[in-house]
Image (cartoon, rainbow, N blue to C red):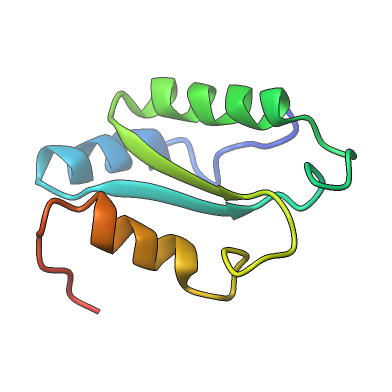
Length: 93
């Protein structure tokens, strides 16, 4: 769960600032290796938990675990967030 690093050391602080300014933070990730049994869901969950802890802000996490309509570049994960998780807040697109 330590095979990634922040692009810059200020990123967690900046994400926390966005949260404090009313933004909803989301991660949309393709993890097809889960379906293929090359990646463990627990490893991905640990990475996300670490990221959330380091930002000190709530983050929605959407994971496409295989080859389906949720996989990016399709917009199904984003659409699901807007329709079910965004509490009717208008989103600028």
